[in-house]
Image (tube, rainbow, N blue to C red; front, side, top):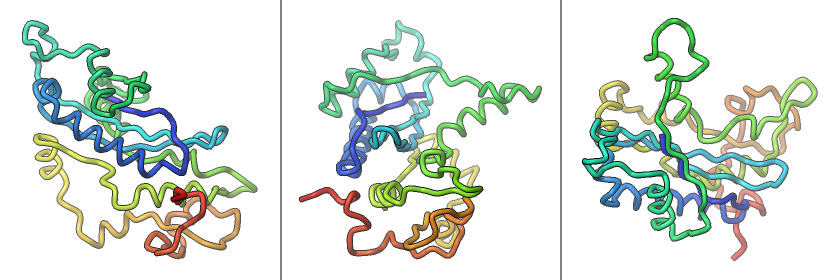
Length: 231
């Protein structure tokens, strides 16, 4: 599992920084050391929000399929942590990036159910790809319901619109097509996240996903002043 990140960013540059992050991964995946070491990859974009600082943390989780000889140092495929970090700094052209995480994926510790390591590994893989942002970053308990900061929703909608939140290569793409038929257009519509305007401060959590909410994502005017960078 490879985690690629950049330093935390403000809402005014979030969209551009996400674009740079995804382009950086594309460049990384085409570097010779990466192509020599990796048979296939799956990547998922995630953005978390820090309520204390107001900053956003866009990052990418990547599941790498490596050949058995990857760990044979005589084969010259193995990359040390610092080599991965240097490659990431180079493709991003950002020496201020100081953190990168790469580790062997292990069965999820919460799956000690006696069903073997397969179930635990499935859950560990699902943890990588299950969401683009943590609900806890958005929903705040209040008065028996939940309230949210609409600026966070607007910022995420504006920055993530038309993004490919997950992507597959080679063997992972083949596995995906074998396991899950492509979604129809109506099924894709059901996955949309809707926004609201002039609604009560407190609603049940389910309201924000399935309520009768105006779809503001396609509005031509700015969603909010804080979401659109000043020209």
